[in-house]
Length: 235
Image (tube, rainbow, N blue to C red; front, side):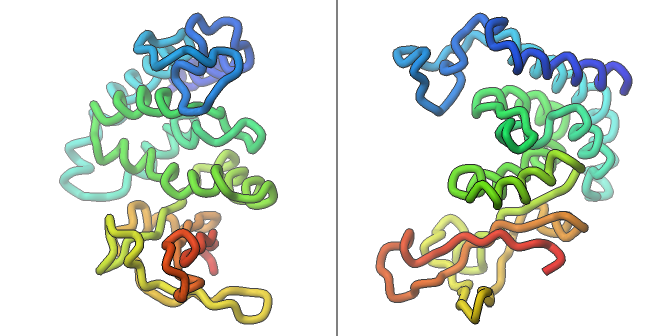
């Protein structure tokens, strides 16, 4: 555990000194970059990515694998493992630096999760599931929303969940029936969601849900029919 914490502190300086990275960061990002506009996807890991890869590999070997069989038998949520991964910086790593995260990109997340899933795919899902709920907030949330709901995830090992699937609408998101109606200054949401990864543990104090609901049923376009809401677990 001591070794893992030391490695966590060693990873952070790499993010603050991009000059140490040998391969252009844009090569590992879905975001365009003026610094390297013609660089495509490179499969040569940077120094930073190799550091994350090794940290995740060591964590998987030393922490996840020894507990995997018992977790499969009991089917319990791996709270202790999640908390240790959070301490190391392997949870919520894609949250922008402005809101307390490391601001990592997609390929870096893949590198980390590949190593975690080697130890146990269930544990890696529990660790990475926060990103499902967080991504809509990262992409479309207001600054105030990001500070409140992303910021708290970097201050404590909290969980959030992506509440979209329903009994008749899994992959077919356009078919959701959950509806939200504005009443005064608030919205009242009515409906049922199923198969929500981390749905139970997100109910803990500080947790929250991204909930997709129909707000304009007369619209034909799904994008105009629906609205995304962030709902506190204690609501």
